[in-house]
Length: 499
Ligand code: ATP
Ligand code: ZN
Ligand code: MG
Image (cartoon, rainbow, N blue to C red):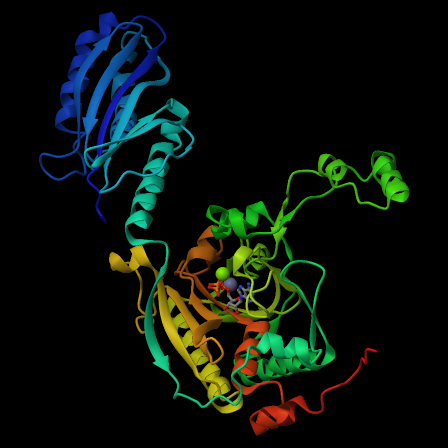
């Protein structure tokens, strides 16, 4: 599946400034030569592209068949220059490229569902193949649109075959630990009045007791990780523009899970007067009227936390001697539309996270990841005393094709940290640690002075997830908490009484 056997059939036309009949012999020479040389260049023997028929009048028509080695649309582009050369003698110019017919055959075991893809006129399944009929012209060929369409379809075929789930591989597991508590932590927190539902979906108001626990988690992170590993604090934006997500790659997938941010079409009071008056009279917020008066989304609320930080480095060149750089952000909320998956304080639409971001050479990224893993282990074993484990996770199709890296070999990928939840007997991811390779420096065009490769890594510490894991195993009664942690938390405030 890695090397898909593609077939291409293209009928294209080079538009001419005048009739090209007088240049026929020259064109024939170019085509003969192309079939032997330039349309075979880079392809194994017997492979590549072939012009199977051609003709000339006000245009030069070429019919090309090819395999994946010299894709027919690349072949068409390769012809332009030599043809222009042959036509030059007769003062005939090439005015553009048109595509009359372009079919691509992609093997698949099963048909795909009906899809709406730009520049795809039709998509049919026929005996083990998808036949794509494209509707494109010169600018799309030059803009490499066919290659992106093929990559998209091949991805869909793979995820249909292997599923979208992750391949999961255990790296390490703690001892089994006898839980001090076996209930649902969220229910217990509600019962004790430590949390109450916020007015939005998947949102909680955290009372002062649990807030103190969160702050203690932050203090542990500060003492055990941020200080010893030399982290510096930054404040990352929490409204993220499309351009950031285009560069980070999130624009490829984020849509069903993001919270959209729309500004008003204008700040003008008069423009909003009817909405204001409507509310004053009816005491109802007129959502349909508002919908008409707000603009298209400029982006969305913080989703993954580190992408907008890269705007600070965008287009810059860094001296090598300042690496590795370690920064973190804990300045605000993250938001995800979690739909049916919402669950207590374990899966929320609004949550709090400390995001660690480290930047350096590939070796530094791997080395830092090892240091972090050691520090995390100390926290979860000696401070919080959790039953937890680490797993190497890779999207399924990457694992199938051996494309997922390995953590020991400083390769790109993610470690999920999971805690055992006694009440459900399931494991819950409570944080992760990723080696992102060159993805961010490449996406945001950040370079090293030496020209060496620049990589980055990040780790998202979910405060509610830490709390959910801790309370699920230890309960909410401080008497059952590990001594060291209990001391750090100190007395729990008791602020409100309700009658
Ligand atoms: P899950 O599979 O549990 O949805 P994820 O793979 O979507 O997690 P990441 O995108 O890796 O999570 O996010 C990094 C960290 O952010 C998680 O390990 C977790 O601590 C936290 N996190 C993500 N989504 C949520 C959420 N909905 N509620 C609370 N914390 C979250
Ligand atoms: Zn990140
Ligand atoms: Mg998720």
